[in-house]
Image 1 (cartoon, rainbow, N blue to C red):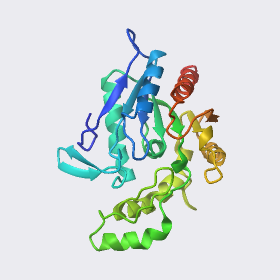
Image 2 (cartoon, rainbow, N blue to C red; image 1 turned 180 degrees about the vertical axis):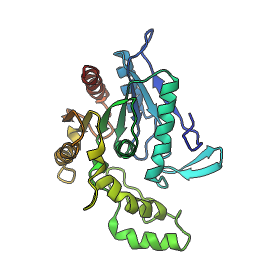
Image 3 (cartoon, one colour; image 1 turned 90 degrees about the vertical axis):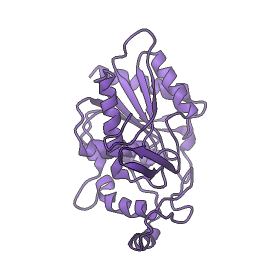
Image 4 (cartoon, one colour; image 1 turned 45 degrees about the vertical axis):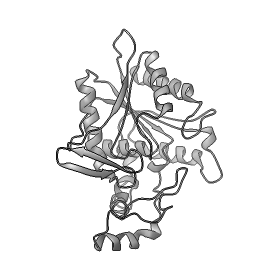
Length: 277
């Protein structure tokens, strides 16, 4: 598949055997991950076996660093160099692919930072084919984890022409600690009011007008990671959504290892609820 700005992206489509699925779930990976994670494949197979198609896809934020090939040449991407605003080109490409495959009832599911990309895109673009959203372990839609004290350093590096250079390790803390380029840090600061809101603009979640399911795994709840608060904040901000459901998934961690069947059941239940509305 090709993004709308001309870069190649990979994915895998799971479809029910011997029949046409009425709905397609498009699953966007989390930070440092990619479409072919074994947990994603297991979830996709389980969902397809129950009659719903499942498309697990790459974005330009896959892995930590990757060279993308496109019509205009090479581009350094991956989670260390990905600019959030460019996610729209990836999502547009996958929506175009889904349409070409004959699917016009879509549910967009984002794991971790993948959920923030979906919210950012849908808050800026009306997509009639998208009937619902799933935010899977998506704390990044509530708060940015990039260390704010590095803002001045990042701006200085960009001004010096070193925007592609990486900031110190730990600039992006969390379950999978890493860093980002100075350019990414500066761009995120500019976009923060679009995603999280400020005194003049509400957060992007308030502009989502389709049903939303948001979950975290029970094993993600720790003193340092208040998943219940993240869920409550998400629900409170979804003021334009006609239906909101939040929950903790039993036995699930951030990567869903060993809990793939639990995740698949929740996806199928949500698809069923949306289909009845």
